[in-house]
Length: 124
Image (cartoon, rainbow, N blue to C red):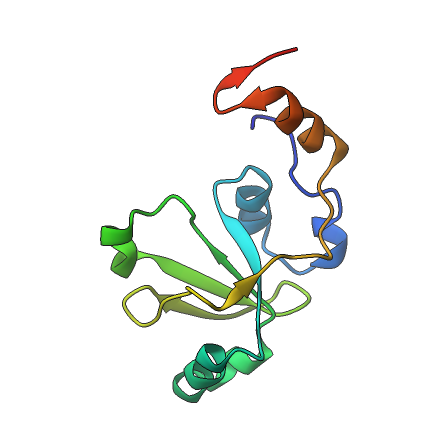
């Protein structure tokens, strides 16, 4: 959505998030999700990638086709937005590891736009 930020508090919640990642999340080019750190799959993944224990969120593309998943790159970040580690889709899958970012608030403009638009069609 051109010019509409998805989250009105992303910069405050994650002050160290790189601007390119912040812009990609705000424009919905990339998605951010909270990691379920109690999930057995995540606990097992941390045995292979111990630094992921510091991660709170993962940034990824929701637009990647399943058959191209192995070429995807996941960006794991900590609570402040610092990059903890990059992991490829060939190294792991995110299914079953993620939850909503309840601390991020959808902006009023975004909610209004979503209310009036379905797909590419908007009704005002």
